[in-house]
Image 1 (cartoon, chains in turn brown, blue):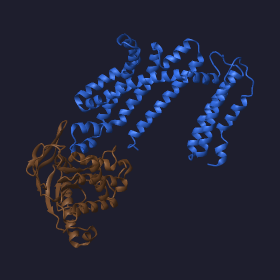
Image 2 (spheres, chains in turn orange, blue):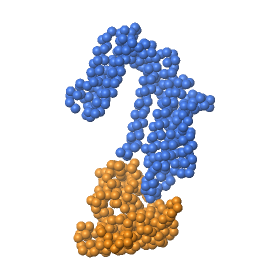
Image 3 (tube, chains in turn brown, green):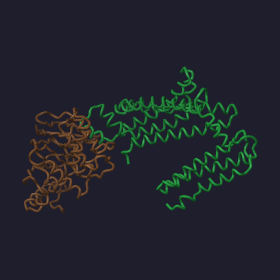
Image 4 (cartoon, chains in turn cyan, red):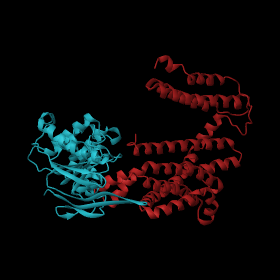
Length: 271
Length: 306
């Protein structure tokens, strides 16, 4: 039932007027069914381009992505998406937004059934009182909660998240990360969704993922795939106090900024 | 708000002044129906009293009493200049009482004329909107057709619709159909143009988030692009509505046998300026009422915009 993802030799070239730009070059990796993978890298490494191809709104110049062995051709009901901005439709209330998403994947449900599911998921993200509010009446963090609730309510096998907390203040970002972690891990009885999570926040990637794929820019390539060695269920405050966490984090930071140091030609980077 | 502020304000003072000037003897011969004006002003005053008891917001109360003050001021001035001192020519400037009296006497006829005028506007306007909006959605969405259509609609929309009236008269069987036709044209082009530009201005992010939800073409057009473009569509609809009344009354003055424009034109031709003024005031009230309802509709449909 769950889906795996294979990214196979993906290359994306953009041609603008008289110069061409390689956003991704020969990117290959695979994601197992039920795995939570973060794609991390500095801006311009092509991580969002990669995700847009997975979403099906962008097409590669070369190579392909396969879901359960089948090449992606456009958008699909097997994937739910949360963007950084504008995931929600401003003219629909929170619950209508969710019900609209459900309608697209489950056409046989009645309107009241859809609204019931919407309410259930709004409850899960702690927004039941705000169900009749329009996005403009909600804070950025609340809007992202609704977007996550919609993606989960659509119950797709795969969840694609493109820097969903990138525009949220630090305190709310922490809360949202923990909420996502809790919802994804569940109570251990249900199957976990396959998640591809794009971010530039190292701590976020460690807390959430099973594996981190680090990318480098110009052209966008995979630099390294790093499994995250921490047990689940995870608890942020306990996790960050362990010395293993500090070591692992340092290793990632060295990889991340070593890349930049290489680019600017120096050995030392002041953090 | 203090009780003093609720009782002593310009509107109430002007109402008293208005009552006092009624004691000045009339210098105009014949019936002036002053009682009608007094009843009208007193009805407004009752409203003022009710509002001053129940209203909570001071700002809203000021706005209301200021508007009432204008009405009272106008009535006082008009009464003094006509029936009291006969400064203005009585044939051209009838006492307000006569206008009110005539309005009541002609009430049935006026209602029929309002019905006839509004019927034409609704027919032409609604027809234009229900054709122009889907067409604009479709043209705006298919980019190639859309850019050509933009130029065409710019050219055709630039022709003031009033100049179609003579051609319409030659073309169409009844005067009513000419009016509908002209209002249709006056609404069609601005609504088409604003719908197309609304569609072209829908943010890419909105389209993308609909695409990833896997919506079909119909849903994309009518559940995503239409509401997203609606604020801009309303700009065209507003423009069409305000032009519609200008055109309708113009058309009615040219050759119709009914409608508010006809009422005004007919009686001013006959030299009955009391009825002319009745017609003018009624047109004002009708247009304000329709704009008010239209604004309500717009605010309701766009309530998601802050």
